[in-house]
Picture 1 (tube, protein in one colour):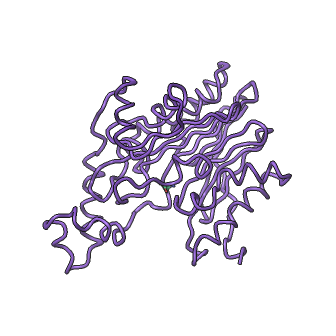
Picture 2 (cartoon, rainbow, N blue to C red; picture 1 turned 135 degrees about the vertical axis):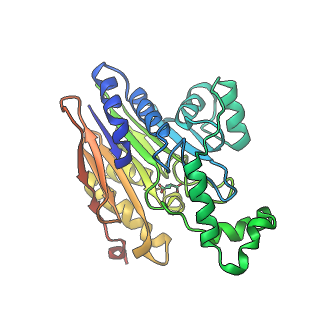
Length: 313
Ligand code: ASP
């Protein structure tokens, strides 16, 4: 049994371990732990307090996958619901679908009894205002007063995401039955175009779990993880006989071909193999990940292995 998470999952990992200690499922463990990160207003990359899109609206993405059956549920661009991971789980369990987005996702959340609430904190709103106006050149400041809606595409291109490299929470758990589950939740790329989905809600891109081979969750530049199916690649490379570290490294190196500038590609992942061995990998020196087993009194935070994507050229 084990729980592995990105560094910001430290607020939820003990809860996940308690569930596993009590004989609970990997799915219950990853959902409960993710909810604690989603509720944390100090985390500006996930759930409540997350940074908004270019119009100042918080839009959340999440997915959950059951490695026992390969069932999965996801929501994208969900507004006004604090726990997209639980809505994603309901999609998996209550619908014949895998993913709902936007209005349909909100409609479904309401139908399932989730309470709508405002997710934009004062702090996030202030960072948004400063971020947008600070990123605009002098001669474009009137976009803010003269109908931001007419310039969204240009605005989303110019404005900077203060935490583009640091967002998203990943949780992977393996329970006492050997079942593996993976949960991923994010507010996505700050100041993104409305409706933009990253890798987090895309099964195979930011999330994949298969009891037979392992699991992987990603954080970082979602667009390239989508184009390379990164999470599924980690699992598939293991299926093809690669060891855990080699599988992760190869999936990371694949990303180099999805950008003209591999040195600037930002990606991090956490993964386990089918024996529950954990690993964290990143393109950014200094990044950590966290893991814990039920036998341990405290989680351990370890450096991730750094991969240089320019090696792939
Ligand atoms: N992967 C997330 C996304 O692209 C953001 C992040 O992890 O920084 O939405």
